[in-house]
Image (cartoon, rainbow over all chains, first blue to last red; front, side, top):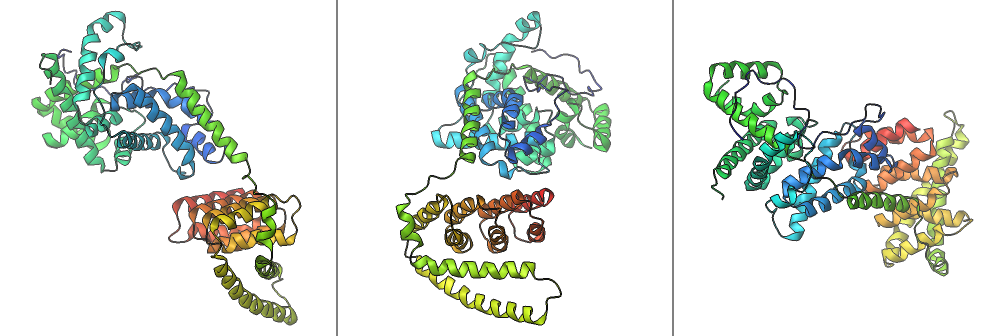
Length: 214
Length: 268
């Protein structure tokens, strides 16, 4: 990664793609996530299948980056959907499905590591590089491949709380008010923590890029 | 707007999610502050790289496991509790609970009577109702006493009794009344829930619907309250509306219960 022009004023639209977080939204789909979850709450349990199809990738991406452990991430993702079933009666009429899902996800991740008595491990770059890159063109992939690996390692250098707030902030569906709700802190605190986490990520990234591995 | 405050908003600014006066102030600060502009550029690069990280492809096994969990939950919703052997029914229904059953039926008779009494009932009817109320009060004390006596039996024994009742194909008034009494007075949440589930098959009987209705305000467990609300919503009985309205407006009620009551009101 190199420092480019500042490109000021800033872009006015969010990036269209965020490490696989974009949802496969079907414009002809009549039901919103909220409507589907209300249907699940009302006893139409098959609606959870549609919610799973829509959210499994972003949820798994979040959990893999959060835990650095793909196997654990899949186990936790499964638990998240099981808890949606179990606690469907607690879903609120005025709720945001995405915020509720990530609220459950961080609880499930915490429970997972409490049970296994271990902390999230660093991401194994060898494993992650097996996954196809869907975004940039081939030359871009070649240029960015090494940086991506370093970025994974830099992400793993962050503390769990820093990783969590930073990853949550990357979801277009979540406002900072919702991120704060998921983290159970004030909006201001969520903003400050996300900024610090991002600055830390950059610091680790530059350090690793220069070969100063921690 | 100073540098520290500007940093707080940088992620939203980069994402194009910062509008309104805060956005204007941040942009104004950036125009005047080269250090913040430099930091913004660096952070934008880092965020862009983070956003480019490829998402892992979920394994087919994850889908299989989640959909299997959905199927399991659907089966558990539709399956009735396993009935206890019918031989246990006699030990539960006779002889001690016969008195309870009679008391419960009498109490429900009173409730149904008041529910149906015309607003301008004549003096004789009112006197009759007052007399009935007095008898119900006395019986209520007896029921309470009998229930206390029942504490000697374990909740498992009482649950088996309820399940045995649920297994009776054509239950008479005594069996239904036993279930009603359990729903209204048993101290175990599990027993009350199973009694309610057993009564669902008899929701066409007014005595059953009314028993759930009069038990709801006295119920303390949110779990049972939710099940009762679902029951009443399923019966589409407009007579349940006042009780549900009171519950949805009451203080100290679990928010899930309150919301369920509000939903049920729209379904009646």
